[in-house]
Length: 250
Length: 379
Ligand SMILES: Cc1cc2nc3c(=O)[nH]c(=O)nc-3n(C[C@H](O)[C@H](O)[C@H](O)COP(=O)(O)OP(=O)(O)OC[C@H]3O[C@@H](n4cnc5c(N)ncnc54)[C@H](O)[C@@H]3O)c2cc1C
Image 1 (cartoon, rainbow over the protein chains, first blue to last red):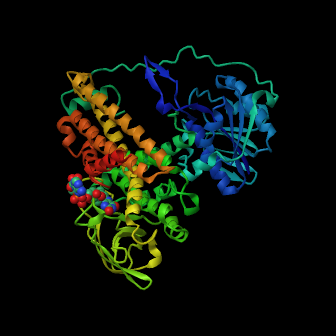
Image 2: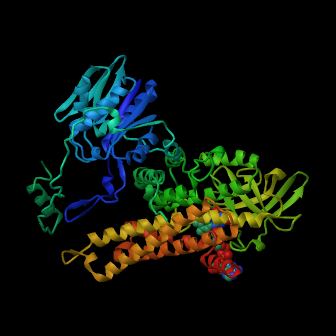
Image 3: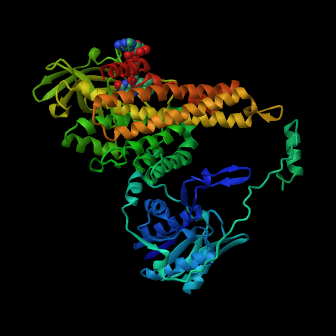
């Protein structure tokens, strides 16, 4: 089974410092979105179970050639990369056009996996848009995926319950963070990542009218937390205060 | 000059950090209390190739170089000094086989070691000396195509685990120390109860008794009388691990000190606003940064040793600085904690017991300085 996993390059959120409520992004190492890693893990597990290959798909600036090693170390078999500086800030519709055009160039995959939202902007649109462009069925909020013949049985975890749906393949599925625990790659896998096959295209080689819309962030302030400065003198008072604030005993 | 880590180096560092935080941290205190590393942690370390990072793939290693090794060991040492010490002593033994062993010895002893099926030991210290090879009293007497070994080795890391032990004994032919590869658990090999040392719990330290141990002559490492060069170069490689372990402990102490300074309140404000505490924070930052780059550099140098004497000097000066600084930083972080730091409930007390060990092992600090001075004056 051929599986494509789309992943986004983002700044390593753990290493971003905040100064004057603004994130400082200079020199922050790049990584892949956390939920995207769940998507990859789901794909790799299905491949291990059913055979086939996992192709990881990235669109972004030239650093993705290096960043993708992370996915190749964590079990992807090969990479398909579309490089252009403009893709860094491109809007979801543009990225969806680029990813869909890339997938059309591949041997037809049975499953296209996304994380439910990217680690930075979390627009949560790209998977659905790609499914629309490729005219494929789509399932979101997946917390488990099982392949049965030519269908996927997917559990969707929703706020008020779980839904189990069946979908014909090929399909687009967006996974949730709790679908699995992404593996930690070994030293050997890390060192072999750079040697796995990679197809690298410039955006203009893809011959797609991707659009030019960009995300312009006008403000990106960390939330200010107002401390209530409640002083208590005993555990009883603490419990009382927490109950009044609605933190316990709800 | 480029001080950026490559993507591969960053990933090795992150892998070790993720494993340490996710799997070791929850049991770090238990390891300290029980002086035992849980089996599933050892299995996890093996799966991630952490028993053989710097060694070539043809001998079961990961081919990650000593640069990858220092990065991973720092992260393991940050969470458990005992586990890092176990890996460090193991890698010291493997490095001796890697440099001085013949093809057969490498295949037989390195492969299971690098894969984490065996945990290797390196036995030099005796009750009489831990610094002076001339005073070694363990003997190896040639008997046909075997040697018969008798003696006692003291404070030997990992002596309880199955695998090879690189053991130094004075052989009767050359009259000099020679290195032997012995299977732990062979006839005549026995061990003491583990030493109840003050820190680095989980790292096992035992005495080894050798009573008429018969070792095939083919297990001699690099030929008779070669003990001294094996010791010198082997221990130089060992210092890469000891330095990284100390660096990890130092990083943990630095983080603990910083965290406490931000959290502990006096008159509604954190103690980090006191200049005296800020000076300690600055000292910790300066010392960690200096130690870090010295250690990373030693990893880089260990990848390509051209002149063993020069490398011995670099290893000795790095190990001395990093191990002594690790304890200094821990002391600073301890002072930031006040009396709370003395309580076993606070992590800094464990780090204090762990980092005090570095300066006393694999050659005490004074001996390191003698090596550095000797080689500097000879140049
Ligand atoms: C956690 C831990 C793990 C260890 N693991 C191992 C292991 O795996 N294998 C192993 O072989 N050993 C191991 N050891 C032992 C350790 O390496 C030795 O104990 C150490 O090298 C010091 O030897 P010593 O205690 O005999 O001290 P000594 O050599 O007796 O030194 C005592 C003091 O005398 C001074 N001194 C000694 N000789 C001279 C001299 N010529 N000139 C000037 N001053 C001198 C030293 O500076 C020192 O202050 C371990 C020890 C510990 C604590």
